[in-house]
Amino acid sequence: MTYSVVFPGSYIQGAGALAALGKEASKFSDRLLLVGGGPAAAPLLAKYEQEWKQSCKLHYIEFNSECCDREIDKIILEAENSRVGIIAGMGGGKLIDTVKSVAGKKKLPLIIAPTIASTDAPCSSEAVIYTEDGKYLRSDRYRNPDIVIADTEVIGKAPARFLAAGMGDALSTYFEARSCAKTKALNQCGGHLTIAAYALAEACHKTLMKSGRKALQDCKNQVLSKELDEIIEANILLSGAGFEGCGLAAAHAIHNGLTKLPQCAKALHGEKVAFGVLCSLMLNESPKPELDEIFSFCLACGLPVSLNEIGLDASDLRSLRIASEAACAPEETIHKEPIKVNADILLSAILQADEYGKALEKS
Image (cartoon, rainbow, N blue to C red; front, side, top):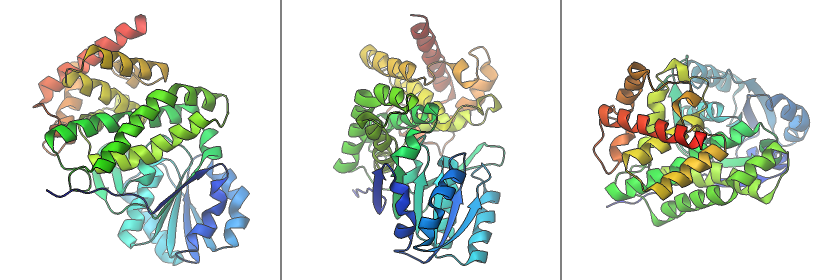
């Protein structure tokens, strides 16, 4: 049996950490292509551009919102025309996965600088590719970023909904790891989970339960607290290395199924994953104390505990079946669960999660 785990080359976290982007890039090349996106990108460029240019020649391009093949090809052309030796992505999850794809295809060193902590994408080697209208298409694997720079001052000023969504994504790490450990399923690296990877998944979960609620409140109040620092690390590093080293299971498959429904388009990745976690607990018949703990955590953090919070309705069985069938496609990770799952069983679990969540909302 072969065990495997992967990590980014280095991880840097702290207030003002982005100032070092140019210096870190210059360790690989003196020509940097920086891809920026989201409302934070332009102010950060204005703040740090001259400092970055002291270390390397900087070419900047804006990201156009969707991680799709057209956007990847556009940035590849930009990288070729500007003859850069390293690429960096500064923005959210879809920008990050786009830049990973460009770096992988062009065999360029890669720096990731997330401006929000809404997913665990920054540290991973996986790039989730969507169609131009946002439907899940495939997951590609390249290699992990050479450097990840998590500037807590930038991330802490982002809307709190993004931090909560990141906690939703991170919430899946331990539960999917637990399922993969039971079934001895292969992880995202193509091997079996290591002691180190499982320890990261457990640490991720404990950190969420201990610091998540306060961190979210501190984010809303623009307070860079110890708890906020811990949750940024959990969302980005612990979850990112944990899910790759342990593997994905039902929660992410359910997310992928939900992307097939236009009604869910406004729900963030981590919000759909969080609801997928709740459904996976129902699938696995988790004990009531665990259900109460995780449903209550989601409710306290503004994560969806019912279908209507992700744009769906329990009476719309046609749409729910479309999502269930997509989540149970033969190649999906839901089949790493320790029980046999088909669309009928999953649909039942989704409705159970919705009913449980609605009852909790009323209590």
